[in-house]
Image (cartoon, rainbow, N blue to C red):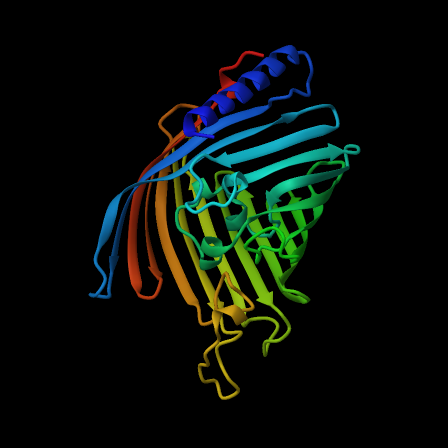
Length: 354
Protein backbone atom coordinates (compact mmCIF):
# COMPACT_ATOMS: atom_id res chain seq x y z
CA UNK A 1 0.00 0.00 0.00
CA UNK A 2 1.52 3.33 -1.06
CA UNK A 3 1.56 6.49 1.06
CA UNK A 4 -1.46 8.03 -0.68
CA UNK A 5 -3.58 4.93 -0.07
CA UNK A 6 -2.41 4.75 3.57
CA UNK A 7 -3.58 8.32 4.11
CA UNK A 8 -6.93 7.57 2.47
CA UNK A 9 -7.39 4.53 4.72
CA UNK A 10 -6.46 6.57 7.81
CA UNK A 11 -8.96 9.33 6.95
CA UNK A 12 -11.64 6.70 6.31
CA UNK A 13 -11.06 5.18 9.75
CA UNK A 14 -11.27 8.62 11.38
CA UNK A 15 -14.51 9.37 9.51
CA UNK A 16 -16.08 6.10 10.67
CA UNK A 17 -15.07 6.76 14.29
CA UNK A 18 -16.41 10.31 14.17
CA UNK A 19 -19.69 9.09 12.72
CA UNK A 20 -19.94 6.49 15.47
CA UNK A 21 -19.28 9.14 18.06
CA UNK A 22 -22.08 11.31 16.73
CA UNK A 23 -24.57 8.46 16.84
CA UNK A 24 -23.40 7.57 20.37
CA UNK A 25 -23.54 11.14 21.68
CA UNK A 26 -26.14 10.31 24.33
CA UNK A 27 -24.12 7.41 25.66
CA UNK A 28 -21.50 8.09 28.33
CA UNK A 29 -19.41 5.28 26.80
CA UNK A 30 -18.46 6.80 23.42
CA UNK A 31 -16.64 4.94 20.70
CA UNK A 32 -14.18 7.86 20.47
CA UNK A 33 -13.08 9.60 23.66
CA UNK A 34 -9.55 10.52 22.59
CA UNK A 35 -8.27 11.69 19.21
CA UNK A 36 -4.94 13.50 19.42
CA UNK A 37 -2.13 14.44 17.07
CA UNK A 38 1.21 15.56 18.51
CA UNK A 39 4.68 16.49 17.32
CA UNK A 40 7.90 18.11 18.54
CA UNK A 41 10.48 20.24 16.73
CA UNK A 42 13.90 20.93 18.33
CA UNK A 43 17.20 22.69 17.86
CA UNK A 44 20.15 20.77 19.36
CA UNK A 45 23.71 21.87 20.08
CA UNK A 46 26.29 19.44 21.48
CA UNK A 47 29.95 19.99 22.30
CA UNK A 48 32.58 17.58 23.63
CA UNK A 49 35.77 17.83 25.67
CA UNK A 50 37.33 15.24 23.37
CA UNK A 51 39.00 17.27 20.61
CA UNK A 52 38.67 14.37 18.15
CA UNK A 53 34.89 14.78 18.11
CA UNK A 54 33.32 17.69 16.25
CA UNK A 55 30.68 19.99 17.65
CA UNK A 56 27.21 18.97 16.52
CA UNK A 57 24.14 21.10 15.97
CA UNK A 58 21.01 21.50 13.92
CA UNK A 59 17.24 21.33 13.71
CA UNK A 60 15.30 18.07 13.86
CA UNK A 61 11.84 16.65 14.39
CA UNK A 62 11.48 14.34 17.37
CA UNK A 63 8.02 12.77 17.23
CA UNK A 64 4.88 12.49 15.14
CA UNK A 65 2.17 10.59 17.03
CA UNK A 66 -1.52 9.86 16.58
CA UNK A 67 -3.44 8.55 19.59
CA UNK A 68 -7.02 7.27 19.81
CA UNK A 69 -9.04 5.67 22.60
CA UNK A 70 -12.69 4.92 23.28
CA UNK A 71 -15.35 2.38 24.17
CA UNK A 72 -16.79 -0.24 21.86
CA UNK A 73 -19.38 -1.34 24.44
CA UNK A 74 -19.87 -0.83 28.16
CA UNK A 75 -17.37 -3.65 28.73
CA UNK A 76 -14.91 -3.32 25.86
CA UNK A 77 -12.56 -0.37 25.33
CA UNK A 78 -9.51 0.20 23.15
CA UNK A 79 -6.30 2.25 23.19
CA UNK A 80 -4.07 3.00 20.21
CA UNK A 81 -0.99 5.13 19.53
CA UNK A 82 0.96 5.12 16.29
CA UNK A 83 4.19 6.84 15.33
CA UNK A 84 3.49 7.95 11.76
CA UNK A 85 7.20 7.89 10.94
CA UNK A 86 8.52 4.78 12.70
CA UNK A 87 12.17 3.82 12.93
CA UNK A 88 13.89 2.95 9.69
CA UNK A 89 14.29 -0.71 8.90
CA UNK A 90 10.92 -1.69 10.34
CA UNK A 91 9.78 -5.24 9.67
CA UNK A 92 6.04 -4.68 10.04
CA UNK A 93 3.46 -1.94 10.57
CA UNK A 94 3.40 -2.80 14.28
CA UNK A 95 7.03 -1.67 14.64
CA UNK A 96 5.69 1.88 14.54
CA UNK A 97 2.82 1.10 16.93
CA UNK A 98 3.48 2.00 20.57
CA UNK A 99 0.31 0.34 21.73
CA UNK A 100 -2.87 -1.15 20.31
CA UNK A 101 -4.82 -3.17 22.85
CA UNK A 102 -8.36 -4.11 23.81
CA UNK A 103 -9.58 -4.07 27.43
CA UNK A 104 -12.48 -5.97 28.95
CA UNK A 105 -13.89 -4.68 32.26
CA UNK A 106 -15.40 -7.45 34.37
CA UNK A 107 -16.57 -4.84 36.90
CA UNK A 108 -15.27 -1.61 38.46
CA UNK A 109 -12.38 -3.49 40.10
CA UNK A 110 -11.17 -6.09 37.62
CA UNK A 111 -10.13 -5.89 33.96
CA UNK A 112 -8.01 -7.75 31.43
CA UNK A 113 -6.34 -6.41 28.30
CA UNK A 114 -4.44 -7.88 25.38
CA UNK A 115 -2.46 -6.61 22.40
CA UNK A 116 0.63 -4.49 22.05
CA UNK A 117 1.15 -2.73 25.37
CA UNK A 118 3.60 -0.73 27.43
CA UNK A 119 6.08 -3.14 29.00
CA UNK A 120 5.27 -2.55 32.68
CA UNK A 121 8.33 -1.27 34.54
CA UNK A 122 8.23 1.08 37.52
CA UNK A 123 9.62 4.58 37.69
CA UNK A 124 8.42 8.04 36.67
CA UNK A 125 11.02 8.74 34.01
CA UNK A 126 10.06 5.49 32.28
CA UNK A 127 6.33 6.22 32.69
CA UNK A 128 6.46 9.71 31.14
CA UNK A 129 5.47 10.11 27.47
CA UNK A 130 8.70 10.15 25.41
CA UNK A 131 7.70 13.47 23.84
CA UNK A 132 7.95 15.02 27.34
CA UNK A 133 11.40 13.62 28.18
CA UNK A 134 14.17 16.04 27.17
CA UNK A 135 17.30 14.24 28.42
CA UNK A 136 17.47 10.84 29.98
CA UNK A 137 19.16 7.95 31.71
CA UNK A 138 21.09 5.28 29.81
CA UNK A 139 18.39 2.77 30.79
CA UNK A 140 15.59 4.97 29.35
CA UNK A 141 17.55 5.54 26.17
CA UNK A 142 18.06 1.83 25.43
CA UNK A 143 15.09 -0.02 26.93
CA UNK A 144 12.59 -1.67 24.61
CA UNK A 145 9.32 -0.54 26.17
CA UNK A 146 6.46 -1.89 24.00
CA UNK A 147 5.63 -5.59 23.64
CA UNK A 148 2.72 -7.90 22.83
CA UNK A 149 1.12 -9.46 25.90
CA UNK A 150 -1.83 -9.73 28.25
CA UNK A 151 -2.43 -7.82 31.50
CA UNK A 152 -4.83 -8.41 34.38
CA UNK A 153 -5.52 -5.34 36.55
CA UNK A 154 -7.15 -4.81 39.94
CA UNK A 155 -8.31 -1.26 40.84
CA UNK A 156 -9.49 -0.47 44.36
CA UNK A 157 -12.86 1.17 45.02
CA UNK A 158 -11.31 4.62 45.43
CA UNK A 159 -9.61 4.42 42.04
CA UNK A 160 -6.35 5.59 43.62
CA UNK A 161 -4.48 2.31 43.44
CA UNK A 162 -4.18 -0.39 40.85
CA UNK A 163 -2.07 -3.52 40.63
CA UNK A 164 -1.37 -5.23 37.31
CA UNK A 165 0.15 -8.57 36.41
CA UNK A 166 1.48 -8.68 32.87
CA UNK A 167 2.61 -11.70 30.83
CA UNK A 168 4.33 -10.64 27.62
CA UNK A 169 7.12 -11.29 25.17
CA UNK A 170 10.53 -10.54 26.66
CA UNK A 171 11.99 -7.22 25.68
CA UNK A 172 15.16 -9.12 24.76
CA UNK A 173 13.44 -10.49 21.67
CA UNK A 174 14.18 -9.19 18.18
CA UNK A 175 11.08 -10.84 16.67
CA UNK A 176 7.84 -12.14 18.27
CA UNK A 177 8.49 -15.89 17.94
CA UNK A 178 11.67 -16.31 19.99
CA UNK A 179 9.83 -18.10 22.81
CA UNK A 180 11.18 -15.69 25.46
CA UNK A 181 8.78 -14.15 27.99
CA UNK A 182 8.52 -11.66 30.82
CA UNK A 183 6.42 -11.56 33.99
CA UNK A 184 5.76 -8.07 35.33
CA UNK A 185 3.99 -7.06 38.55
CA UNK A 186 3.37 -3.31 38.95
CA UNK A 187 1.61 -1.06 41.48
CA UNK A 188 0.44 2.48 40.73
CA UNK A 189 -0.30 4.19 44.04
CA UNK A 190 -1.85 7.59 44.71
CA UNK A 191 -1.82 8.99 48.22
CA UNK A 192 -2.45 12.58 49.27
CA UNK A 193 1.06 13.85 48.56
CA UNK A 194 2.83 10.68 47.45
CA UNK A 195 2.51 8.82 44.16
CA UNK A 196 4.24 5.52 43.53
CA UNK A 197 5.08 3.32 40.54
CA UNK A 198 6.70 0.14 41.86
CA UNK A 199 7.41 -2.99 39.86
CA UNK A 200 9.05 -6.40 40.16
CA UNK A 201 9.97 -7.91 36.80
CA UNK A 202 11.33 -11.28 35.72
CA UNK A 203 12.61 -10.97 32.15
CA UNK A 204 13.89 -13.96 30.20
CA UNK A 205 17.12 -12.95 28.42
CA UNK A 206 17.80 -16.45 27.09
CA UNK A 207 15.75 -19.60 27.40
CA UNK A 208 15.45 -20.51 31.08
CA UNK A 209 17.58 -17.57 32.31
CA UNK A 210 16.07 -14.42 33.82
CA UNK A 211 17.14 -10.95 34.86
CA UNK A 212 15.21 -9.38 37.72
CA UNK A 213 14.22 -5.72 37.91
CA UNK A 214 13.12 -4.05 41.12
CA UNK A 215 12.01 -0.54 40.16
CA UNK A 216 10.75 1.92 42.78
CA UNK A 217 9.36 5.25 41.59
CA UNK A 218 8.42 7.75 44.32
CA UNK A 219 6.92 11.17 43.62
CA UNK A 220 6.06 13.91 46.12
CA UNK A 221 3.47 16.50 45.10
CA UNK A 222 2.85 19.74 47.06
CA UNK A 223 0.83 22.52 45.43
CA UNK A 224 3.01 23.84 42.59
CA UNK A 225 6.08 21.77 43.46
CA UNK A 226 6.77 18.12 42.75
CA UNK A 227 9.81 15.88 42.72
CA UNK A 228 10.46 12.22 42.08
CA UNK A 229 13.21 9.70 42.76
CA UNK A 230 13.43 6.48 40.75
CA UNK A 231 15.61 3.62 42.00
CA UNK A 232 16.11 0.47 39.93
CA UNK A 233 18.17 -2.62 40.67
CA UNK A 234 18.88 -5.24 37.97
CA UNK A 235 20.30 -8.67 38.82
CA UNK A 236 20.41 -12.28 37.65
CA UNK A 237 21.77 -13.94 40.81
CA UNK A 238 25.04 -14.71 39.02
CA UNK A 239 26.79 -11.47 40.00
CA UNK A 240 28.83 -11.07 43.18
CA UNK A 241 26.19 -8.86 44.81
CA UNK A 242 22.49 -9.10 43.99
CA UNK A 243 22.02 -5.44 44.96
CA UNK A 244 24.31 -2.62 43.87
CA UNK A 245 26.23 -4.09 40.93
CA UNK A 246 23.79 -3.02 38.21
CA UNK A 247 21.45 -0.14 39.02
CA UNK A 248 20.06 3.29 38.11
CA UNK A 249 19.05 6.30 40.21
CA UNK A 250 17.12 9.21 38.66
CA UNK A 251 15.78 12.36 40.33
CA UNK A 252 13.79 15.32 39.05
CA UNK A 253 12.36 18.47 40.65
CA UNK A 254 9.72 20.66 39.02
CA UNK A 255 8.28 24.02 40.02
CA UNK A 256 5.08 25.17 38.30
CA UNK A 257 5.56 28.89 38.78
CA UNK A 258 2.17 29.74 37.22
CA UNK A 259 -0.04 28.69 34.32
CA UNK A 260 2.65 29.80 31.86
CA UNK A 261 6.01 28.72 33.30
CA UNK A 262 7.58 25.52 34.63
CA UNK A 263 11.16 25.21 35.86
CA UNK A 264 12.84 21.83 36.29
CA UNK A 265 16.14 20.21 37.23
CA UNK A 266 17.02 16.57 36.68
CA UNK A 267 19.94 14.22 37.08
CA UNK A 268 20.74 10.53 37.11
CA UNK A 269 23.34 7.79 37.41
CA UNK A 270 23.54 4.39 35.70
CA UNK A 271 26.16 1.77 36.52
CA UNK A 272 26.74 -1.87 35.60
CA UNK A 273 29.64 -3.64 37.32
CA UNK A 274 27.98 -7.06 37.22
CA UNK A 275 30.12 -8.58 34.46
CA UNK A 276 33.15 -6.33 34.20
CA UNK A 277 35.49 -7.36 37.04
CA UNK A 278 37.28 -10.60 37.88
CA UNK A 279 38.03 -11.89 41.38
CA UNK A 280 40.98 -9.47 41.66
CA UNK A 281 38.87 -6.50 40.66
CA UNK A 282 40.44 -6.30 37.20
CA UNK A 283 38.42 -5.59 34.03
CA UNK A 284 37.52 -8.61 31.94
CA UNK A 285 36.11 -8.90 28.44
CA UNK A 286 32.49 -10.04 28.02
CA UNK A 287 31.14 -10.56 24.48
CA UNK A 288 27.85 -8.78 23.77
CA UNK A 289 26.11 -12.11 23.16
CA UNK A 290 26.74 -12.98 26.82
CA UNK A 291 25.44 -9.75 28.38
CA UNK A 292 22.88 -10.28 31.13
CA UNK A 293 21.81 -6.65 30.86
CA UNK A 294 21.68 -5.36 27.28
CA UNK A 295 20.11 -1.99 28.18
CA UNK A 296 22.75 -0.76 30.65
CA UNK A 297 25.65 -2.76 29.29
CA UNK A 298 28.56 -4.11 31.37
CA UNK A 299 31.18 -1.47 32.10
CA UNK A 300 28.70 1.44 31.99
CA UNK A 301 29.15 4.25 34.49
CA UNK A 302 27.03 7.09 33.14
CA UNK A 303 25.90 10.27 34.86
CA UNK A 304 23.95 13.28 33.65
CA UNK A 305 22.43 16.43 35.11
CA UNK A 306 20.80 19.57 33.83
CA UNK A 307 17.99 22.07 34.15
CA UNK A 308 15.50 23.87 31.97
CA UNK A 309 12.22 25.71 31.55
CA UNK A 310 8.89 25.28 29.78
CA UNK A 311 6.58 28.03 28.58
CA UNK A 312 2.91 27.59 27.57
CA UNK A 313 1.76 30.58 25.48
CA UNK A 314 -1.95 29.69 25.22
CA UNK A 315 -4.09 30.56 28.24
CA UNK A 316 -5.55 27.56 30.10
CA UNK A 317 -3.96 25.11 27.67
CA UNK A 318 -0.91 22.86 27.49
CA UNK A 319 -1.38 22.16 23.77
CA UNK A 320 1.53 24.40 22.71
CA UNK A 321 4.80 24.34 24.64
CA UNK A 322 8.17 26.02 24.21
CA UNK A 323 11.11 24.57 26.09
CA UNK A 324 14.83 25.08 26.60
CA UNK A 325 17.38 23.16 28.68
CA UNK A 326 21.04 22.39 29.08
CA UNK A 327 22.51 19.10 30.27
CA UNK A 328 25.96 17.71 31.00
CA UNK A 329 26.64 13.99 30.56
CA UNK A 330 29.57 11.63 30.21
CA UNK A 331 28.52 9.51 27.24
CA UNK A 332 32.07 8.26 26.65
CA UNK A 333 33.41 11.78 27.19
CA UNK A 334 32.03 14.85 28.91
CA UNK A 335 29.35 16.31 26.71
CA UNK A 336 27.46 19.61 26.92
CA UNK A 337 23.98 19.56 25.40
CA UNK A 338 21.77 22.58 24.77
CA UNK A 339 18.29 22.18 23.33
CA UNK A 340 15.30 24.39 22.63
CA UNK A 341 12.11 23.41 20.91
CA UNK A 342 8.40 23.54 20.24
CA UNK A 343 5.84 20.85 21.09
CA UNK A 344 2.28 21.02 19.79
CA UNK A 345 -0.71 18.82 20.36
CA UNK A 346 -4.04 18.97 18.58
CA UNK A 347 -6.80 17.44 20.69
CA UNK A 348 -9.55 17.02 18.10
CA UNK A 349 -12.11 16.18 20.78
CA UNK A 350 -12.07 19.82 21.90
CA UNK A 351 -13.47 20.86 18.53
CA UNK A 352 -15.90 18.02 17.86
CA UNK A 353 -19.39 18.70 19.20
CA UNK A 354 -20.89 15.38 20.17
